[in-house]
Image 1 (cartoon, rainbow, N blue to C red):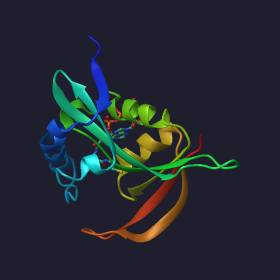
Image 2 (tube, protein in one colour):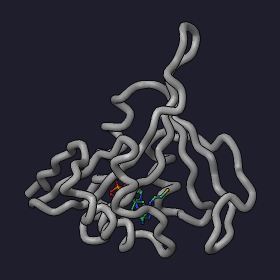
Image 3 (cartoon, rainbow, N blue to C red):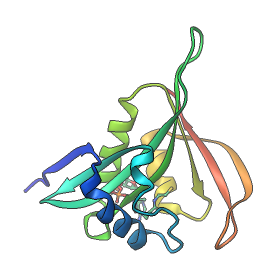
Image 4 (cartoon, protein in one colour):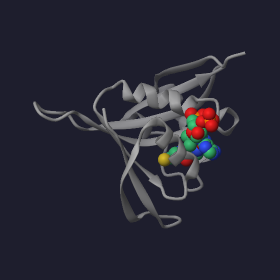
Length: 145
Ligand SMILES: CC(C)(COP(=O)(O)OP(=O)(O)OC[C@H]1O[C@@H](n2cnc3c(N)ncnc32)[C@H](O)[C@@H]1OP(=O)(O)O)[C@@H](O)C(=O)NCCC(=O)NCCS
């Protein structure tokens, strides 16, 4: 049976679950429960469980001759619901906001890099020692509108 996935904006009631998901998904979690609603955060709900999230912000509103730009700041899916298309669905909703999308990803994060590449993001640069704990380069990727 196909999974029923609800994508909706995050609310105050989600903040503790978002922080728990951050702690589960990253070896060096840096986002606290109060951080998520500072930006635009969408959650994926499966069977009443918060299964994933994406956080983004607008970095440029656009002009007469330039498209708006957004940056994806954070994305994660709980281990139990991975490889079911949830991150892809969250990215589709992000893309619907319009404009060009940018993100940074750890060079060693093969799963995320494959996901982004498959979705259509292209590598545009590499930032040496962009991440700490452990120190690692960041790959900057862009999805053109
Ligand atoms: C990266 C992550 C968000 C992917 O979430 P997901 O819901 O499993 O991704 P999807 O199901 O949409 O995957 C889409 C495609 O991406 C690729 N992909 C995803 N995870 C992969 C993995 N572990 N290994 C290889 N390819 C992978 C596959 O091509 C996959 O398609 P397929 O399952 O049909 O082969 C999830 O693994 C995660 O939360 N990781 C820890 C946190 C993290 O690294 N976040 C990104 C920070 S930049």
